[in-house]
Each structure stands twice: as structure tokens, then as C-alpha cells.
Amino acid sequence: MAESATPHAPRPKKRVTRTQARNRRIIALLLLALFVFLIRKGCVACVHSHNDKKNNTAAVTTTTTEETTTVPEPASILPETTAPEPTPTIPQTTVTDPPTSEYLISGDLPTTYSMEVDPILQLPELPTGCEITTLAMLLDAVGLQVDKVQLAEGYLTCKSEGEATFQQAFIGSPYDSAGYGCYAPGIVDTARKYLAAQNSGRIVKDLTGAKFEDLLREVASNHPVAIWASIDLVDIQEVYAYTIYNYTETNSDGSTSTPKDLDVYWLENEHVYLLKGYDLDRNVVIVNDSLNGEMEYNMNRFKECYEQCYKQAVIIY
Image (cartoon, helix red, strand yellow):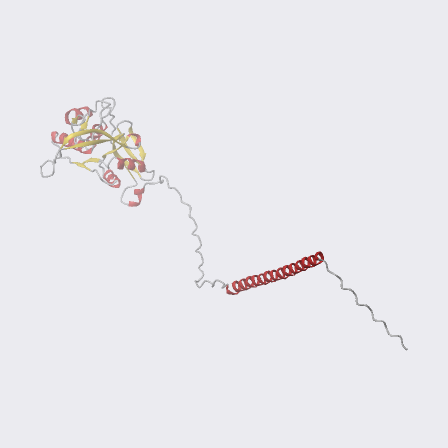
């Protein structure tokens, strides 16, 4: 008879203690936390990667857009202009006194002309009497010989400062080195009084304002001219001399102007010459100088001084 098998006895179940169960739970929780942590980290990385990719795409798109939308500046439609060539500078030359007079071009004057008129010196009797001394030479040139002192004493009207203008009288005294002098109208008045006293038919004319060329024409016509310029042809200085208070002028109709205070000015260094000749080729004038005798002066400079002295001149026909 067969031997019957003896059945195995069942294994006893392994008993889990509380401590083991607690540890298992802790491990399970840790694994769960780790799992959650890893899942979240992976999601954040994906998000960051997605954002970076999106930003890079936007940057690329923007750059591409900027590059594609950049429009080059249109070429100028204005025609090109060519700058003008600079004008060459012409050197300027300074012209000094010409070798011949400017009056040579007029063609109606002799090249040279000179008259024989003896000089009369004002010193020592008349230290400031160039005007009256030149008038004596002018009268002598027309055949009326007169002493300069006699002419000054008997016919020259003299006034003190503040009493008259230089046109009306000699201010001061020609005998005094502090005297002033007079202008053309004062000499015209003196000459007329003398000619009237001599019963002469000669005519005195005030040429003030005449062109210098016209004075040369008078000389070329054998008429010497008393002409105002300056001592040694130095520059003229117009200086205040004095004031005439309540000054009145007589008008052409005989009426008088309203009284006013008049400041009177003097041409310092003024001097009167007798113009009696010239030389256009040498550009000189020939004069009788009451301080130096017969002299020659540069014509251009003499003209300048004449113009500085208001172009005053007197002639006797």
C-alpha cells in the first residue's frame, strides 16, 4: 500500500512590528516627496526651457524684422553742384605821390609857370602877421607897393577874443606872438579899404571854395593868389578858441538874427602863402613864404593843406 504523503505544515506568518510599520510609512512618504520634487523640478525646467526658446525666437524675429524693415535712404534727387573756383587775389599796390601832378591830365595848363614877385618877410615886426604880409606881396604883384607895417596899422581890423569871428577881423595883434590871425574875409576887407584909399580900380575877390586846379589857372593867367595852408605843411588842428556871447549875424536883407552864444574855433598852425608858380613835371608849387622866402613844396601835399584850411584864397585883378 502506498505510503501516503504527509502534508507540510503551513509557514507561520511573519509578524510586522510597529516600529517596522512606522519606518515603512516614513520611507514611503520620503519616496513620495522625492517623486513630487522631481516632477516639479522637471516641469520648471521645461517651462524655463520653453520661455528661453520663446524669447530667443522673439529676439530672432525682432532682429529679422528690423533687418527686413530697414529702408535705405533714397539717393538725393537734387542735381550735383560744382563749387565755384576761388577768384585769384590780385595784390594791391599803394600809390604814393606821383612823379607828375594830377593836373597834367587837364591839358589846358602850361607845364610850368612862374612870376617874379619879391618875397617879404613878416619877422621881426609881425610875428603872427603872415596874412597882412602876404597881402603886401599880393598888392606889390599888381604894382601897388606898400609897407607891411603901414598896411597893418592903417587898414587891418583887429579885435579881442570874444568880440568877433576870424572872418570878421584879425583876433589879437599881428605884433604879438600870442595873436591868432584872420581868415580870407578879413584880408578881403583890408585890401578893399586900402585900394579905396589909393583910388585904385583893382578888384579884390574871395576865391574861398575854389578847386586847386582853378587856382593854378589863375597863376597861369599871371594872377598870383594868397592861399591859406599850414606852417611847413604840417597837419591842421581845429581847436576851440573862445565863445562870443549874444552873437548876432546880419542877414542879406539887413535884418539881424536872434542872439546866441557862438563857440569859435581856430585852425592851429594855419599860414598864408603867395602862390606864384608851379611845375607839373616836378609836381611842385612855387610860393613866397613870409617865414622862409621863396620856396617850393610838393603840390599834392600843398593841396591837402589848402583843403584842410577850408579852401581859402584871395586874388586881386
